[in-house]
Length: 251
Image (cartoon, rainbow, N blue to C red; front, side, top):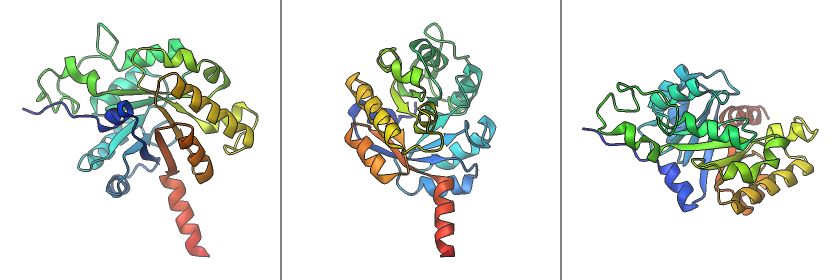
């Protein structure tokens, strides 16, 4: 019989270990497999801002499975049926975008927990259960599921402490692009005002006892985020890295 798969990313969150990741928007299993072999601690499959959906995520999870990298999946929204499907397909870490309040954070927690604690629907013959080969999966699954929520609006930033206090939230990610737009600097995620707001949010998350996450291809910004206490950080996006590399070859 198979055993419940350990979530190394969640263990890293608990230990406070810095975990470096890659943001993935290319829905190709060969590209994902190549990146999975590079040594990242985690790779995020983004269905919110890409052509991916739960069905196209499945072969990407399968491509990553042979490598010591933790997959994270971002659903398109706080959508319990979509989150349920991603969990059944084997995702163990979910990043829910646009969480603006403690109430929404609690709804996200409920979406990843089985009744009576939550509302996740029960199915036995899924990839998550190793097709019914993991004894006691439904009682133990939450131990290895990490629920991350994303704060990226002024309302959410105002509510950081309340969101951080919601039982079952395992980490908080600060979204720089939407935060920049909220501050009047759309398309300028490294604007000085955005940098200061993001660093303040990171410090408040850490002070509230939660792991903090961030994404920035701006190396200086990413350095400052880590210095502020963020422990799961991505410094690149697969599509941006591809474009950058190809343009550099043109000279």
